[in-house]
Amino acid sequence: MRFLFFLAAIAFFPMASFAQDSKLAQQYFQDGEFEKAAVLYQKLYEQQSHNDHYFDRFVECMLAIEKYEEVEDALKKALKTTPDDVRLYVAYGNLYERQFMEEKATEQYEKAIKKMPADQYQVTRLASAFTNLTKYDLAIKAYETGGQLLKDDQVFSFNLAELYRRKGDIPKMLENYLNSLTSYPERLNTVKGQLQRFLTNPEDYAELQAQLYDRIQKNPEAFHFVELLQWVFIQNKDYKNALRQAKSLDRRLSENGARIFQLAVTAFNDRDYDAAVTAYDFIVNDLGFSSPFYLDAKRESLRARRLKLVEGFSYTEADLREVERAYEGFLNEFGRNKTTASIIAELADLEAFYLNDLGKAIALLNEMIGFPAIDVRIQAQGKLSLGDFYLMKDEIWESTLLYSQVDKDFTEDQLGHEARFRNAKLSYYNGDFQWAQAQFDVLKSSTSKLIANDALDLSVFIMDNLGLDTTDRALKLYAGADLLTFQNRFGEAFGKLDSLLTAFPKHSLEDDVLYARAKVYSKQRNYEAAIVLYQEIVEKYPEEIRADNALFEMAELYEFQLNDVAKAMGYYEKIFLDYSGSTFSVEARKRFRKLRGDNI
Image 1 (tube, rainbow, N blue to C red):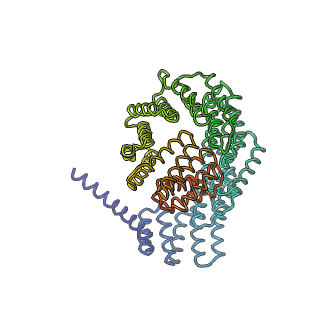
Image 2 (tube, rainbow, N blue to C red; image 1 turned 120 degrees about the vertical axis):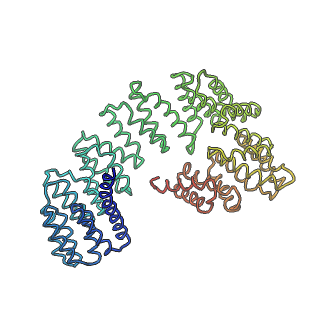
Image 3 (cartoon, one colour; image 1 turned 60 degrees about the vertical axis):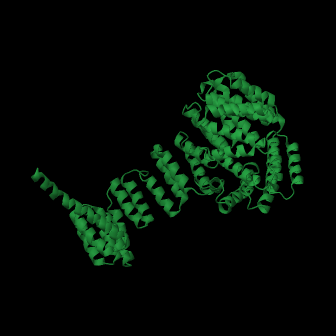
């Protein structure tokens, strides 16, 4: 055992010493101590004579300290030992170039390409040597010559694309990426990733689109080019043309709607509801029951139609009735049961908030939450909505009963937190501010960021306004107006706010009154009037708690309703720059970057 241990120690110490020298050499190199590094790299190379890395680093160090004769001696010796290593000619050329011997340098570079063998690995190594010296034209020539030697013009297309990218030649970069796909269609996702990184403006995508049309015209069966063209349209948010390509691919590849459904989801998430509806309806009407996506497509088409209206700038009652008929048609086809419970809930929302038929909305949800074996979370969400609808009818007891049921059934769940928040808000509406604030304080630690932020806002709001007066009458008037707004009784809400300002002139709630009025105008889709009031809050009350809320509301109106990206970006930017402590700061920065076009 002792003898074996002795042998192991003998073997281990040189290895440890070698590793230590390698690490030290690397450190010297990084610190710019090239003379010390050169000594160690030379020693390491001699110990491992076939390790090109140590030789290259030795040469690099010696060139850095201008020991040109020593470099030349080392290169001559290396060429005698490994005459087939054409990279050595590149090093020779670099040696001459450092000494301003341009003709000799060029001669060595050309010699490297001329002596290059018909070996893919050697071609790649030579081109990499040129690339490391930023000699992209010579690297391109090496790859092109290598392709000729290997009798395969496209074997190095992917490498050439990268070199043309470095040169800033986008058309040639694209040409070579497409050449690479011709031989290796399985690289499609890799190519997409590269293009997404390096195409930075519409002109680049237009060039890619033109080249793809040319390729598809010459080879209509090259499905990978059609798929890439679809991807280009999606990048440009041109879902109409993307759908045309998706239909073609779906038919040729017998995908039975899978690709089209995914495109519809993408358009839906991007709020292009028209494109989403068109794609979903194609699955429903053209593919029909044969597609496994039929039911999902029909359901999602309904949601897209509804959101197009409720998130849109304008709609008529006729538009709403058309969507209502579509929902009822779906329920007539698939029945009213646990499977369609979420659709019933959506229809109830439409009836309550947009068609002002609270009775029908309540009837729908009462039926839905009683379905046997219904998903308990959908049932709970239905109870929360039903509680809201009873509150809109001023049936307070029914509301709190439903909220409390959900709170009890989902105590530690987000649904339970939501129910508790709504119950606390109900107490706020009723003027029981101390109990409401205690509940809001607990909910500030909710796992739901939205609930936590809303709870924090209301807690601070109550605390600020309860401590200012000996009476809570002003706050009760404001909370009453809040409830009337929730109940869509806008005229009465405005009247109560007027009463507040008349009874309490110059009250600290003035900015809150402006904010409440602006929220009403938003609900009425009078966005310009809302913006005027939000702007007044920011200008007159920049230090009050409503300022950042007003900025965020304005930014959202400009982004989603008024389609003014520049103004939306301006308000988002102001939030995270001037109100960095705001609960909206992180979200504002994210939306700003998205509108700017950053890859998030």
